Length: 256
Ligand code: ADP
Image 1 (tube, rainbow, N blue to C red):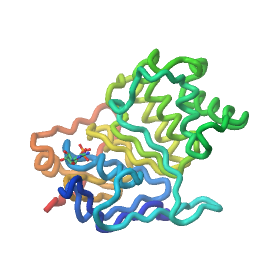
Image 2 (tube, rainbow, N blue to C red):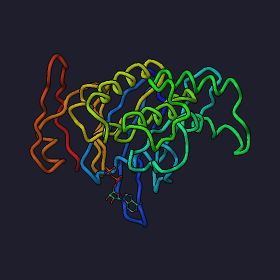
Image 3 (cartoon, rainbow, N blue to C red):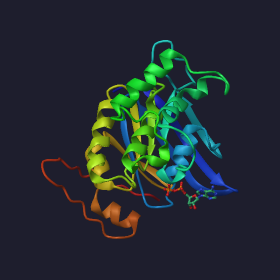
């Protein structure tokens, strides 16, 4: 078992005093690939916000442990790919600036990027298949190109954990396959937390699964039952496997 990067104990999250998540225990391990699934409004984004430090827990603890040489306990470099709808495409910013902004947290707002940082951004853009698009404004990108620029921004600082919130929304199927290839490649260097409503794809990609619906059920390396899905998504869901891709069945569990 790899070392724990994030340890969540008895987490409770609330908005205006109304609890939306409670009794959440979760450990994310180094090089983990954790899928977070659950019905709309179940609390997936709230959990992500707590992990990123954007929402203060109403109870419980979240501990961070760096596994890198020289890394300090309590500090963890995290990259975040927000939901597509959270992005203002009219904002006048180029692909290169989007990727470089993933390094901006390290410096003052007026500091210029060094040659080494620009080179790093260039390498990341090449890895994302965005060569030649560095000066293009984000308003002139396709959905898939914008997602790759945002993924570049999330990974340019070499984070130990990359968190993606619904990355396959609004992208075409062709790019979706490429996105998941990129993620499995990245997973050799860092842990990945992937929030998705696309259960079929998640189950093919991940090493462990958390089902979130006010509480959290964790499945290390496992299978999901159609009973759980139907009960928690309030509709019958069919899991289809296409081609040669393996699929999984999680053991039965209860949110109570
Ligand atoms: P999911 O990501 O699984 O769709 P969310 O974490 O967005 O779920 O929402 C969980 C619950 O918290 C929902 O009932 C939602 O209405 C509520 N909620 C989310 N954000 C806020 C907010 N900023 N203020 C008040 N309630 C919120």
